Image 1: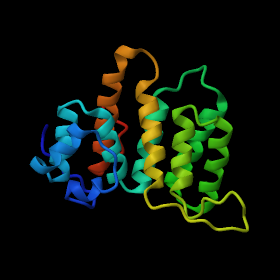
Image 2: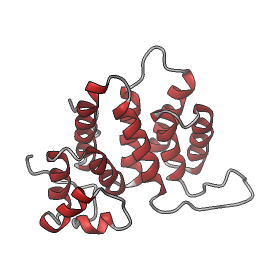
Image 3: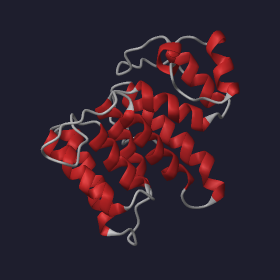
Image 4: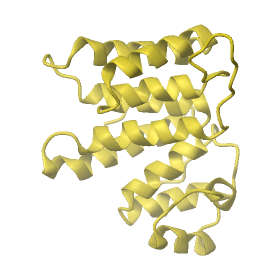
Amino acid sequence: MAEINLVKIKHPNALAICQGLELEEQATSLLNEFPVTSDFIDQLIEQKLYPDAVRFLAHALPKREATWWACLCARKGLTDKTPAIQVKAIELAEAWVYKPVDENSKLSYQAAEAAGYKNPASWAATAAFWSGNDISPVPEAIVPPDENLYAKAVIGAVMLAATQGEANQIESNYALFLKQGLNIASGGDGRKVQ
């Protein structure tokens, strides 16, 4: 892969990002040989360790960029038969990306609940909710989310989106989504990636 400048990823050391991250043994074994973040992600993709690459990139990206990535992946699976609530969930997650305030975060939570947590759209909305400052559904109680909770929802959105549809499309879906994620990590918006 060509050398890329991952300006949005603040940890140049892959091991720092992998702390507490559950990766397959094959992926973990690459850390010693490829300790630089960009080299490590390149190797994960080159060796087609796509789920590990998704996990790693979801944790490496900042909240807004990771949530945007989840939205892009969820949008790819939309059809004219997609329930309106799923479309709304993506729209509300995108609204949080454009304006990351608690009001938008809370609206994303409601959409994620309505969409049922069985589709990429719901998990993209959950990523927006878990990226906010308060994950309590009760207005009187403020509960800040764990710092990396958003990444779990992003992983759910990306992996569900990659595995939707025909089995022979899974690998190409992962490849496209990871290109989009790397474009976002490089300061792009991921939309023009093919």
